[in-house]
Each structure stands twice: as structure tokens, then as C-alpha cells.
Amino acid sequence: MALDGLSVPVPTIFGENEKIDAGLNARFTRQLCDAHVDHIFLLGTLGEFPLVTPQERPALVEAVIESLGWRTDGWVGCGAPSTAQAVANAVQAEEAGAAAVVAVPPYYLSPTEASIKHYFRAIQKAVGIPVLCYNIPAHVGYAVSPALVHELAREKVLAGIKDTSGSLDSVTGFLRGAPDGFAVFPGDDGLAASSIAAGAVGAVMGSANVVPRLGVELVAAARRGDAKRVGELEVPLKALLLAMEAGPFPSVVKYLAQRLRQVGAGYREPYGPLTAEEQARVDAALLRAEPLLRPFL
Image (tube, rainbow, N blue to C red; front, top):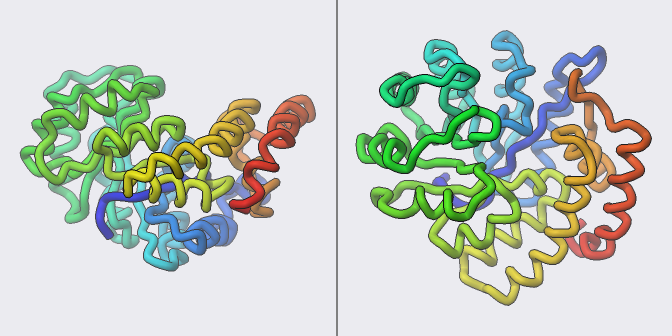
């Protein structure tokens, strides 16, 4: 499948004793395929990838990718603090059938620009599927620059980028001067439509875990340039995002998906279930949002 459209960064569902439940994860994503999302993005930030051990990754990735239906394909996060681990993650993802890998740059310590380039080149050399950079400075500790990303794009190392910086200016910075065919995706749901209008080829939307049809319709309307429909769809989207912001990330996404889609939602500490007080805040926001969301449920 082409690198465009709607990508859903799915949570990782933990079962009894906080163990990964491959079956629950497969069922969770299969329902998203039934809503006709274009891509499932495993083991991203919402997927709590730092909590998943290298030993746990293969069974999870294989189960989810084998479960995909419609025309949905799978992207897998492979970023790690070390180049060797990122490469190993990418190779395993490709062997499991991933259509692309998505890599945050090395995090915790701050590498040199030359080291960042080596990291992405090593990942790309090890696999035969597209590699996307994942710019998320709030969690990595630094931002990758458009100049660095475009250099690697011209070398055919990077096929695209997911930019979760919270800024439309950042998204447009990656669009300006990018080589032909380079795919830019905003990772902030509220910037999806405006980023596509500016030239992004799609969007990565965590809210689509909760109300997938809304995300599918919004991205489609934005891509065909239907500003009127985009405006209509952004009203329920904003209401949904307010409910998501009422509780702690990433647990709130699982809670809302369970409430609205009746799917399993298991947790691993330190990101456990919502407290009673947190549930009350989220439920209050959801009560206001539900009339707007009902047509998409």
C-alpha cells in the first residue's frame, strides 16, 4: 500500500498479570481494519513501546499483522536508544510482514547529527521496506531538523516522516524542500486537516482508536479538498480530543476505546487504569461529546 491516508497508532493491550495478550491486540486492530483505516502503526508512543521487551515484540507483531484485513497494512515502531537494537527491531518487523518501520531517533542521551544519520542509514540498510523518521521532541529530548531529514530522503534512506511536534510550522518545514515522493504525516490529531491542506499525504491519528470512522472520513475529506466537510467533521473531533485530554495518556485512549467500541483494554504499570476521579472527568467530557460522535459509532 502507498504511504498515504490514515495511520492509526494502536495501543498495546496487556492481559492477565500485565502480560501481552496477542489475541486481544489482534481483535482490537481487526476492528479498525473493518472501519477501513489504511495503516496500523504498532509499538509507537501510544503503543507504549518502551514497556515492551525485545522478547515480547515478535509474538505481538506477528499476531497483529497476521490479523489485518481489508487493505490495511502494518507499520512497526523500531526506534531504540542503540543503533543495534533499532536495527534488530526493524529486521524482526520486516520478517513478520510489516509494510514499513517507523523510528524515533536515539533517545535519552543526545547523539551528534552524524550519529543520527548513521543510525537511520543502518536501519535502512538492514531492511527492504520503507523507513519513516518519527520526530517527537517532547519525548526524545530534541527535534530532528528538516535539513537532516531531507538529506536522508534524497539518499533514499527515509521514505517519510511522522511529525508529532504540536506545530503546523514544523509540519510545513518538513514539506518545504522535500524531494518528490517524500511522505509527511502529522502526528497531532488536531493538525490533521490543516497539514493535509498544506501538502501532507495523510495523518497519524490516535483518536481513530476510539472512533475510527471519524478519522477515516476526516482524512478522506481533507485529501479530496472538501473544506466544508472537513469543517463539519472537526466539530466532533474537537469534542473527542477534549475527552482524551481529560485523562492521563496513554491509559485514557484504552478507556475510551473500551467505552465506545467495547474492546479489551489491559494495562501495564506505571500506566495503569484510570482512577475513579479520572474516570469521572473523562466521562463528563464524553457525555458532552457523545451526541456529536454518535453518527460515527
